Amino acid sequence: MSWAGPVASPDEARAILGLGPGPGSWYEVYSACRNYFIKGGEILSAQRPISELKRIPVASTSIGQREKELVQQALDTGWVSSAGEFIPRFEEQFAAFCGSAHGVSAMNGTCALHLALAVLGLGPGDEVLVPSLTFVATANAVSYTGAKPVFVDSEAATWNLDPARLEAAITPRSKAAIVVHLYGHPADMAAIMAIARRHDLTVIEDAAEAHGAEALLDGAWRRVGSMGRMGCFSFYGNKILTTGEGGMLVTDDAELAQRAFWLRDHAMDKSRPYWHPEIGFNYRMTNLQAALGLGQLERVEEILAGKLQVARLYAEGLAGVRGLQAPPAEPWAKSVYWMYSVLVNRDFPLSRDQLRQELLAAGIDTRPFFHPLHTLPPYAKGQRLPVCEDLAQRGLNLPSGPAISPEEIARVCQVIRGVAERS
Image 1 (cartoon, one colour):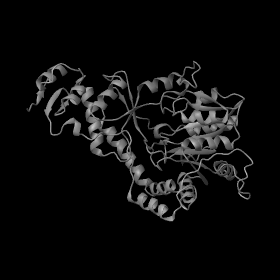
Image 2: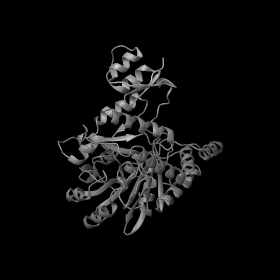
Image 3: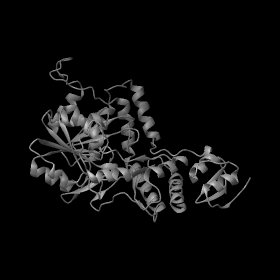
Image 4: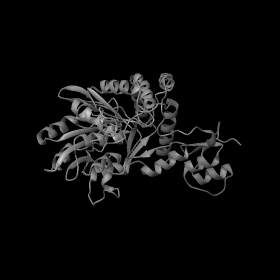
């Protein structure tokens, strides 16, 4: 059977295809009919069934030949655990990439955050200011120390920590602030660092999602992670640079770096084996992970250029779609677009969650924004933070991994445009 032409409704489409009564959504029909594409209210003769279309994941990792070579070298040395040449090389080179003097690798980004707080000696009775709109690890790391996370609302322009609300939340118990660079766009570090100086507040950057992003500070471009007293990164599989699992703490403070190295390795006395004066952590990265990370770092400019290309293709492909709001792009910031994130506004024909279902039916994976942390059961105390609550309800992360192809981006944009045009 072959058909191409306008149809009035999903029910009419199902009748033409001989599918009988069924769901009313165009893309539920699209998914069900298997041998036909539905586009903008038309049935088109299919070249391939929907079941054969490649699923587009929300994140896809780019692993090159160089990474494989370095991992093989690490395997060949036999140093596969937490000793070996690749660990210090990765630490030194990643710190230099960030513009910092020291790098301390860790098991993952959460461990890096916990180390940063631990080396400051934070504990019960202390408060740490954190944005509510972030991944839960930011607050959990504070809770591990016994300190209290204090949640701060976002600013609408950048989706990041609002500097004015940050300053308003400072109390005599406030010892530090963790500043997250959400979805790859830097927070307003110039304003935040000025506040921190006024209140003697230590700033830790959570740059898990923003490797290579930059912001203007004191008239110069600075990479994220290098502006606060410490910066923390994640190398999870969906991040811009990956080691599978892994993390890094960077700092210019040699004393803090040395204490982080020590705590990371069970707080063991280097001159007296198996003597542990304090309770430490087993937060070490493996040599295999570091080899993979070093290979990724050698390709970092290529990877970052690819992320900018992804953002450009999405911006062009979704231009003019009513009700979709593009991600932040402030003139004082250079975003790396970890995710190409949009807001589904109220003048879009469908809700954010309905759009996600339409994309899923077309084989396209997406993610909603994080739930604000002040609404999660471990932290809910009835607090209201209206900006981040609104962003969380409307925010949508489109497939954005380093390995995504222009053809896949075009397919995502085509489906979104089809949904918008038919409604």
